[in-house]
Length: 136
Image (cartoon, rainbow, N blue to C red; front, side):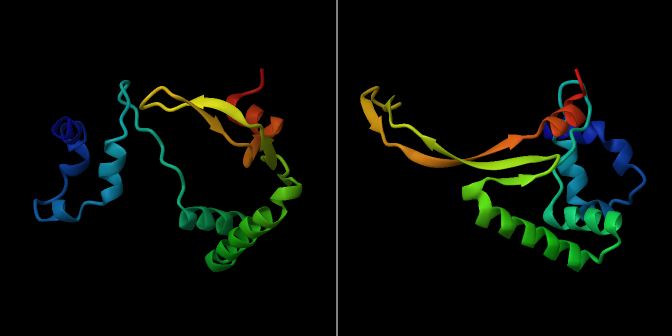
């Protein structure tokens, strides 16, 4: 599998000298491994620093200030999630009470009682669904 991937992306590596192959960016190889059956490259999620850089570019802030903004936003979300935390146009964090239920031990098949608990769920806003999936 790995050899096939490198053969498909030989055109990326061809202009490099053999000594440069050692220093090829790891991201190129990782992205090469995310090929699906139609030979299209799947996009990777943005890292925290990449997201901070994007926010900085769009808002005119420094990268450090935008990273601090993201951290403060996360802290606010943690603090207010018990009462529902909403990001307009994105969605909201909701605290949900899950009832006790009867489950099965997958190894033995024996029935077990699963206790009630609180879980955090994220509900995507309609605007975000329409923007990502396209309006119906």
